[in-house]
Image (cartoon, rainbow, N blue to C red):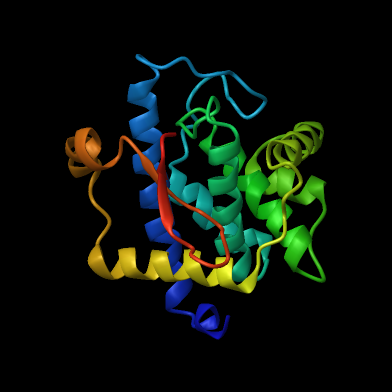
Length: 203
């Protein structure tokens, strides 16, 4: 999409996506007290010290994949959340899910892309772990990697609308205050090509 090639668009998109994922992760961290959540290969023993925004900016800087990969990675994360409700995105798995989703998107979309060993270095994990994460992510998606133009446009348009409504990402304090209201659910798309209506799916 030509608009994504605008050098001013991607930094804003990365910042907004980071803010969105941060709020969802914080919400699900709180929900762990009330809802059982499975431990998966994506879970770290501790929360990574690097912030979600810094991590996503690092991926954007070094992965050299097409800008569309980040929209498709977002689609994949949403599909994963819908198919794996017992593995919600949280502070312990969001970083590994991010690096894996971007790598899988790059392999699916781009003619040229880096190998798993390179993405492992970017993500700060071993190549062996990167390989395991890729396989688990693909099975978690049910190998549903195709993203139609309509679906891509729906997700990108939704992100654009949210960015216009919320041009400045909320601080962590504001995010914490809003958890009880807007972030107990994660907005997911019904990818029915005739409607593309949003449905609310608990994560």
